[in-house]
Length: 429
Image (cartoon, rainbow, N blue to C red; front, side, top):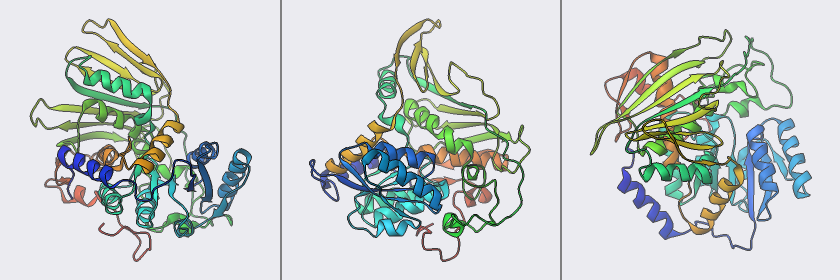
């Protein structure tokens, strides 16, 4: 497994721009799209897209008939006509008129669905984290480049004006050299209880929902949201919510690729239920010196603690040699060397600019703001943090090969086990 250095990444970007869009769409034409996954985020995408004049939603797809029906109804209320509903994403991908798909499925379906989609000739907008495990992220990059397709990840801060201006201020030296970034994820989740195996509801194709993951008996507290907290299907809250702030932290630090060392502590300090991932954790990622000083990214998670820090439940702070910057959901603020307030900006995060960036790049062949190669290292930090916390020990990494050094157990967790012979299991895993 290898990760591109800056030169390789820019070469990939140039190659995509030179070749142009793989399936040109006239500026006067409408994009025909499908939305795969009709939960809260998928339906939000569908409603946002339905309001656009340059998009026609042909399909909404979900293994739960009730969810796809509700999404189709929501689209019809905005666009005036209802899209077709499907359970199986292959029906959407087989339609050659579909230009692009939005993948807003559970985490374990992100990479398999995205890879199948670009192999079927579709451009892909895939929700965060881009992958369920580190290896899948590399396969997604390979698939997007192989098929010359645009693959945007749903970390929409990358297309937010205020976040872009904040990062520019850091690049321009507003707080000197940035050496440390801290991320916090502090909010109140709920106890999901303890449940036993049961029969899935008739409106749900549970076998299809499980897909290429190992088969696990259905239990009532698994669907539709709590899969986030189970190893086989989710990535914990670090991958669910923390990935947004981790991506911003990595962006602001200016670090590319993977760190050289990861340390973590955490566990279930608060909830007594079926959740498998930690509710409390602290993870530190150290980046090697290279040509300059080492840098560190610190992630803190307390999903039972709804108390704002720096005015935000979830956010970032950057520490530089001449000051610090806080950057949250509503803006950024610089503080000088004696904590005196400096420049600031207000803003908000929304889907339309990120959608527009994706669709514009399909037309132009340019690299999107949250290209799969941009997000892969951010999602990888979530996976590495989970591995270090789960095993209770530090990890040393070869960031070029994307490998853990001297730890066979951790190395195995860079990948996952798929159901034998399942049609959606990615090749090369």
